[in-house]
Length: 413
Ligand code: HGY
Ligand code: MN
Ligand code: MN
Image (cartoon, rainbow, N blue to C red; front, top):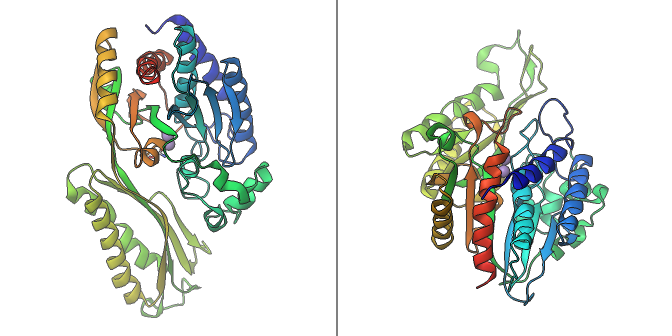
């Protein structure tokens, strides 16, 4: 039962965490390896300790709290989400899932559950990939998918690499592989998250049982032309990077719409250099984010983008390169765990529906290799990745009741 006590604890924790943003009054900006990340991690450590967990920070910047089970060597049950955010984002994306995990630990203790295996709460670092254009850094490191070269390879808009950002944050990037967990040490992964879309709110449904997560491919494309005078250079003498790039960019949404199955594609970032209104651009940088439940659809759109770049950039007389930032396939989540949560919803008379996730999550990375499940709570008006992102604290409380029953079952098997 989602009591006032549970609602009060979730509200208090999230109200405190709202303060740790680089853009107060303009949403949550909590990028990895920054002052705001450090403040949030310190607070998470404090409330994890207060919940009786053994707390540590790993080599990737993940914050981990362990409720010891009778057999600590058995595969653990892990629950968590990410503590970083996008720029000018909302106060609930990711971080609310970390709080839900801590709240589940509190309820397991209050309900006198004696776990046979460890219950591990995790706040992941840099799920969004907002600063370095990547994604799933903390959860990827936990699975052994991040190394020193990866840390050196990706840089933020100021040219600071993950490697250097980690060092200035107090981590040793040379030790990134220490964040890896031994194969078989994690038995199940659970993640509570805001839906970030309109379905639950529109249909007035309390909880979303997520049965699959879309695959994602992300690219940074740079088209090289030639800087020239915007007035004196005849049109047939220009190497106009914007002309070529926009002929490609403008086709991408239609290629997604043609799939007519929920496939989406977005160009969220475009930059012209040097960026003068009376200068023919020397180069254009733009991102592509393609998502679908069908990996073939994602590959097809990526292929069409390459073919269009070949055609348009060749016609312009310039060149281009594509920097691959993220390639991850769609994932089906655990039907067994979903069924257990469905029974809890029925028991507590919470309305629910099975649904896909159009957003990527740490569960997308982790679900590639082990039994994983997600539970959504409604996003008001479907808005997310913006300051108006909102979910009622009572919705999070309901999710913690359902997930603590799932966790209790798994921990006593
Ligand atoms: O981009 C996403 O889908 C997630 O919010 N990281
Ligand atoms: Mn997000
Ligand atoms: Mn998220």
